[in-house]
Image (cartoon, rainbow over the protein chains, first blue to last red):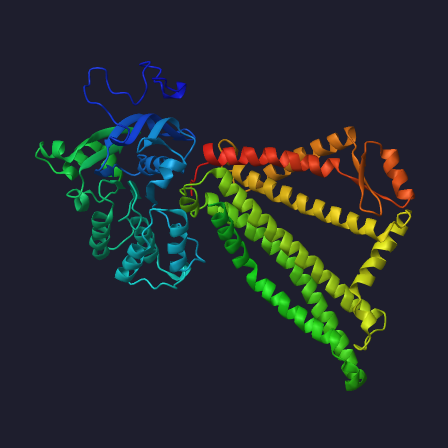
Length: 265
Length: 302
């Protein structure tokens, strides 16, 4: 099989995504939701991601954990195709970042992204225009559940309501990958369980959900897999079952692994 | 997908200028009523009041049309910056479309909105000029149909301008063709201008060019504009191609400036095509570079 030069790892002389030679597992294209090799990204002199490599199996709910400034948002933005000047190899659902990966990826940023002039129904129309996997009926049902009026302008909504609107449009997609950046960050504790319920009960079966959060305690029972970042590196990348074998909670392990950085948080 | 992007671009740009266009429409209706209505039946005071009202509304319409152009430019470039690299970029840049499609859609919708604002501006000026001219020429009475012959007034302006430049007035069809060619050239220049601004805004979001914060896009615009214009001037000086137009709308091309000058003295039209089309060709290169930057180099950092 011929490989493109950029797919070859200069250290091993083998493709980045090839399995170890002694590994008997035969990898199919979509075994892994995310394949990252030697990924580095810096902002000026500040190296945020330092040559990290990891694989995340498909069909998991992945908790992306780490202290502030550890590169969670940067990693999610790279996976969503919003940051382009990185080095390394990144594949989402077996595809390099581009049109193919974006069409299967539902991205929820930690910012409000709908134009203020949009009415809520315009937001629905916009998603329907551009995403073939968007379920309009589901979105309208969510709007009713959240009590969002269909003709209300985005600029007249509170920040919390805008975040709910974004969440419902993103979760109304039947995507293979969901990238959710701090979905519970700006909402009150009462709304958290509703939002969590929306997320956990509405992603497509077999889809992968990558969810970054600081609220480890609230979410640790929901995760199948945990990816912890700190000081530009991957500190933990494992299934939740492996973590539970230690007899500790995810939050306890998080505090142990992150150490001093947790105090900063 | 491109059609949907263009539709959204239009909606975004027009939403910012809709109110001012409605205001201008109302002003135009009022001005039209003032021109058409015969105020002399109200005596001298009525006629003077109508005259003053016409002047005030004309002046307001002129000022508003200038504001509409500025507002359109701010809306088009502001929308590009905000929707591509601002917080709305989290939505736009995550769409499953190529950077070239995003750029093309913004370019088409932005250019058309700017051209519309220019057309509205010129139409407003012509309308105001017509309003004033009818007064200056003594056609205060609305019953005189000659006072509404805008075409005749415009034609007079053009012939005066040609005579003033010492050239023989060519056939009407040649002038008509030349006006269309220069109007098309104006549209091409608007296209290039809009694209260069988009390029400058994009470059200002690419490392290391993002180090200059707010002034970056302005500096990059003037630099890229100087490069494009400089090269087109250089090429124009080296390769002079003129389109010669006769009264039967027949075109011939010449590489000789003397022949072009001679054409004018024989009452033909001569249109230099090198400069603007050289700029247009370079704008294709600018488009490809900008699309590459969007796809490979730009970060949504907002």
